Length: 140
Image (cartoon, rainbow, N blue to C red; front, side):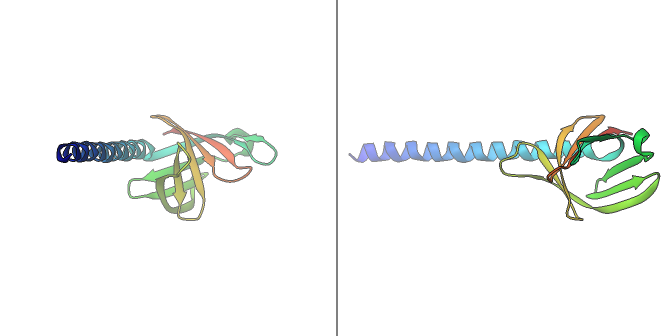
């Protein structure tokens, strides 16, 4: 009887250790992925187009006459330039949101975006709001 209890406790301890190890490993992978995305995000991005809004329109630099550049700086500073003039400067934070697989950007001015696509030279941000836009950028 005592041997069974020892074996049972040993197995329980192994299972608990395994579960916590997996939680730690999976949590570390997620943080590492965020760090890699943060490194890729850093820099200046040129606006290519925006699709969406209430009317489902497509806007481009050619159709609006605006040249928009966004910049993510290493120290969590976000800047937006319109026609070469600084129009927005605020902070930003990358976060995972429960129930979503995409990474979110929360800006200090109260806005938020979803990183729909991020690779070396292309960034797609989706506004986190009803009738928001899907904004496409190219790395400078």
